Figure 1 (spheres, one colour):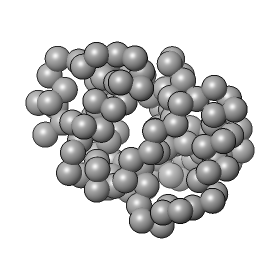
Figure 2 (cartoon, one colour):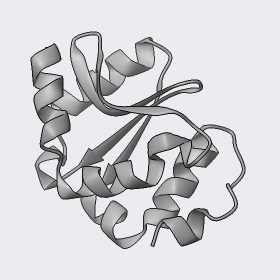
Figure 3 (cartoon, one colour):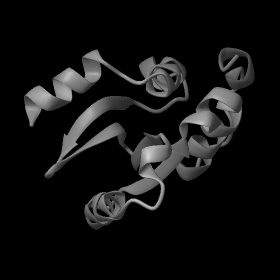
Length: 117
């Protein structure tokens, strides 16, 4: 599993790459890890305080039962799961960042709008 997570970090999707550029190095005031191993699943992005999992999905995830199982597993561990479609990351990165901040119970971070463009 660890090797798979490493391989996924080396080959992110375009949407994952964009979102990582927006949330890495505590740019939102939250510390995230990417392609983190949680139980028997790998989450795209994880914040351990507060407990948030962020998933970025393409069309192959539409009505996917596997994702429901993963969400249930993450939820059973106390994580709030946020899912965004790739096009949301491409077309509305500010909105994605705002949703992450709301889920964390935080107000907006000054300058998020300028960093997301």
